[in-house]
Image: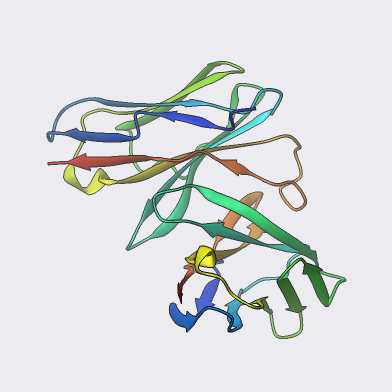
Length: 116
Length: 109
């Protein structure tokens, strides 16, 4: 398996523009997670899905952020409009089981977003 | 916040030396996990230790857990340049995996 795939790997955009990040989880994994990593705040969970359904989006910072999972093999994280403070590395991760206490999360390589 | 704190924030050693990283957390846990992140990459799961375990080994990794002190340590023995990375502990809190602040390990050849 190719692991979790994210695209693009790097994105540079101007403030006010719409940004869409994409993720393909590992086949057969029922859970998908979106994280944001910054120097100031570390790694933060934004939202996660179970069987394509959003379970907890309490980490989504603002209404400018939205995430969808139209099918088991694809998810998007959209920021509209983007702001400079959204600059970060965004990771997608997937896991097989429901128990976060015991199951391993597999991370994608991340998308480095720069908003000018 | 439940976020774990790693100590030290940064560590530089020579190849062959041992590296020890510590993690402290705030609330009771069932398990604690350690992840590694190479520069420009995603996190990779290293090892999980359960709350009823005190020590666990995996290759050159040794993890200890002291639930009375709410702390864990990760020891990498006979370090290699390829061990250069950031290391994070992670615990579950309110159904979310919460990562610590990380230790940046630099191993010089």
